[in-house]
Image (cartoon, rainbow, N blue to C red; front, side):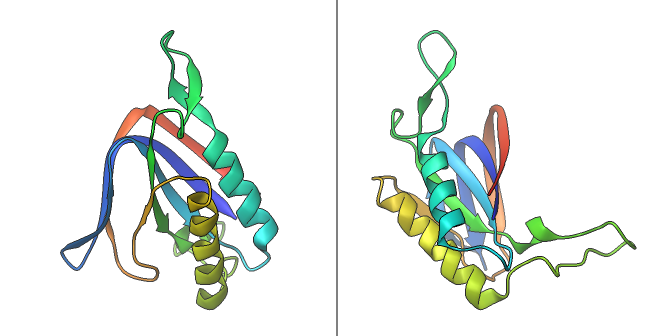
Length: 145
C-alpha cells in the first residue's frame, strides 16, 4: 500500500461538478493499493498517519500530530500510484489491485482512521476526480508498507 501525504491548509475533491469531500487544515492522502495488500498494511499506515507529527509547535518545529491540531483528512483513491513507466511511454498498472480488493482496503483504511476520532472526507472510488489543494509548507511525504 502506498500513500502520498500532503499537509494542506485546505483541500477538496469534485466529481462531475459536485464536491464530494472538502477539508480545512489537515492531510490530503492519495491512496494506492497493490494486489498483495492486506489489513496489516491498512492498519499500519492508518495508525502511522494518525500519529505523524508534522505540524509545527510554538517553536516552529514539526512536533504536533493531526489530532493535536484538530486536523481533518481528505482521502482520495489513486490506482495510478502503482503505475510502472520503466518500459515504453504508457504506464502499466499491473501492480495495482483489482477494483474490488482496492475498494475494500481503501474503505477499511478510511474506517481505521475514523476509529481514531479523525474526520475523513473522501473522493469517489473509481471516478474521474478534480482535486484542489493548498499545500502547507510544502510538506509532502510518501509512506509505504
